[in-house]
Length: 410
Ligand code: AMP
Ligand code: MG
Image (tube, rainbow, N blue to C red; front, top):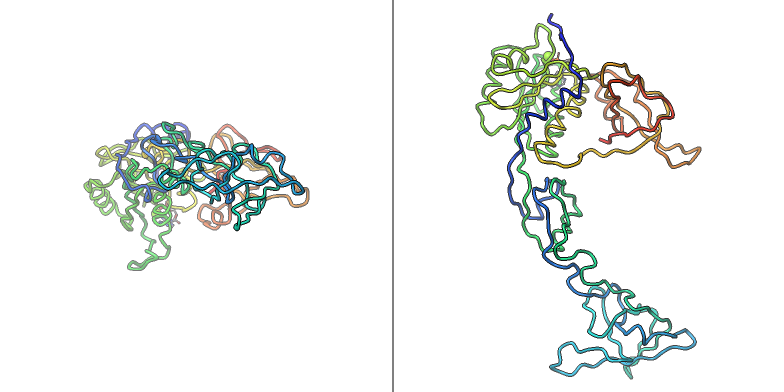
C-alpha cells in the first residue's frame, strides 16, 4: 500500500488548478436562449427605456397645475381635449384632459396622470370632475428613467438570470455573446459499480458520474463516459480515448484516486502525462489529484460521493468558473450564527455540511447554522439533508458557538 507522502494545502492546489485554466470561446445566441449562460460582453443599451414618457396608471392625462386646489367638496372641472383632424395627436391646452391607459405615450402638453378613481367623467358634456390634485410628474414613467442610451446594463462575466432576459428584451437586444459551454468528460471507476440506468452489473450504484454531470451542467456540458473497471490497462485505454476525443476540454474521473493496490488513476496519469499534485489537505476529499495529459486537465476525484462533492466544490467548481470567464461566484452565501460548535483540526481544510434554521423562540430573524451530524463520506443523505456547506480554513480549530460565518448554499 502506497501512502500520500505529502498533502498540499487547498490554496496551493487551487492555484495550480487555476493556472491551467484555458478560457472557452465565445458564441452568439438569441437573447431568449441565454438564461444561465455566462455573458461574454458588456451589454450597452442603444436606446432609452422607456422610449417615451408614458402613463404609469390608468386615468386622465392632465396639466397638473389644472388640478391644484381640487377637493371632494370643491371639484375642479376639465374639458375633453379634441384634436383637429390632421393635427397629429394634438397638444393639451389649459383646462383640458385626455383619458389614458397604462403604458400609453403621454400627450404633448400633459405632465401628470390623474388616477381613474379621483375623477368623474360626464360623457354627455365631455367634462371631468376632479376631486384630488396631482403634482407634476405624478404617475408618469419618464423616457430613459429605467435605462439611458449608452448605459451598461449587464456586465461581462455575469451568469444571465431570468430577469436579465427581460432587460435584453426591453432594450431590443436580439443576440448576445456568451461563453461556449466547455465539454467535460466524466468517468467512474470501480469493479463494484453498476449503472443505475441499467446495462451493467455491480453492487454499488454509480452515483458520482450522475452527480458530476448535474453539477457541471449548470455551467458546462457534461459528457458521461461510463464506468471503467479497476484495471490499469482498461483505465489507461479509457483515458487515452477520452484525450484523443478532441471535443473534451477537461476530464473528471472519480474513484481509484487513492493509493491502494486497486487504485490506478494516479499511475495512468503519470504514465500518459504529468500529475501536478496528488493528495490535498482537505477533509473529506484527501485523495484528490490533478494532472495534465496532452494539455488536457484531468481531475482525479475520490470515490466516496461526499468526498467527491467536497473536492468538486473546492477545486473543480473554481476551475469551471474561471474556464467560463465567470466573475463572482455561482454559489450564494448567507451569514449565520453558529449554534453548535463546528469541529475541525488545524492543518487541513474542512468541508462541513450544515443545516440552517431560524430560532422561532427568540424570533430575532437571524439564520442559525449547525453541522449535520452524520458525517461518513459515503453518506449521501448527509448532503441531501443539509442546506449548504461551510469551509473551515486550514489554520482554524473549528468554529465556536456564537461566531458568524458565511454558509454556501447548494
Ligand atoms: P475508491 O476511491 O475507488 O476506493 O472508492 C471509495 C468508495 O467510494 C468505495 O466504497 C466505492 O464503492 C465508492 N465509490 C467509488 N466510485 C463511486 C461512484 N461512482 N458512485 C458511488 N460510489 C462510489
Ligand atoms: Mg475503487
